[in-house]
Length: 215
Image (tube, rainbow, N blue to C red; front, side, top):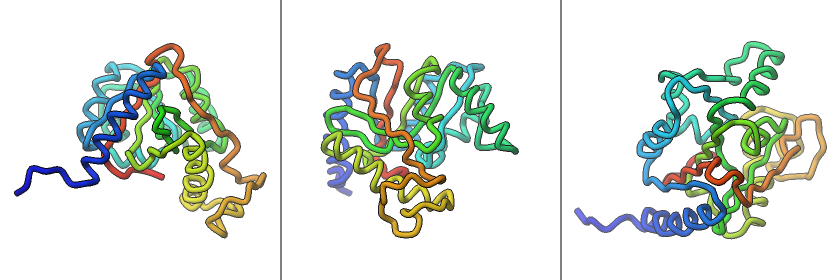
């Protein structure tokens, strides 16, 4: 059997080295892992036991298995996804802003190390910007695009129309698959945040994975 990596694996590895360096130049901490299993091991090593952990809605986090590991581990978890009522969900969203560690996915990452996320209510992007002591962002290499403008386009014109299908929302893109720049009640493009620099340095940690994860 050949020891030469598959073309996509090699491309991901090479591109990831560039993106990790770009993120570090912007004062993020960053790592690349070939598999989700390796990435989850690193993520758990960054989170002290008995600390408070929360997360934003993310297909990527669930697919890697890290959410289940956190629920099974020795952590105090704030799980807004399990809230039985809207009122409790709102309270847990507010509690997450004071968590020790907050985890999230990323909608788009530019090769020069800028991160773009899109949000409906703002709880996810708010926590990444300020509040939690530590933020860990997890993304498959499918999220990496050439420029920050491409990252914005990916978030708004690809990720959002896909995610409305997950939530069964009533927006124009739910019917057409294409963004209509709407202001509907169900709009999930209320807040679009670009993280171009990390302050304080290394508060935000980025985990890149050589797999296709999330939207």
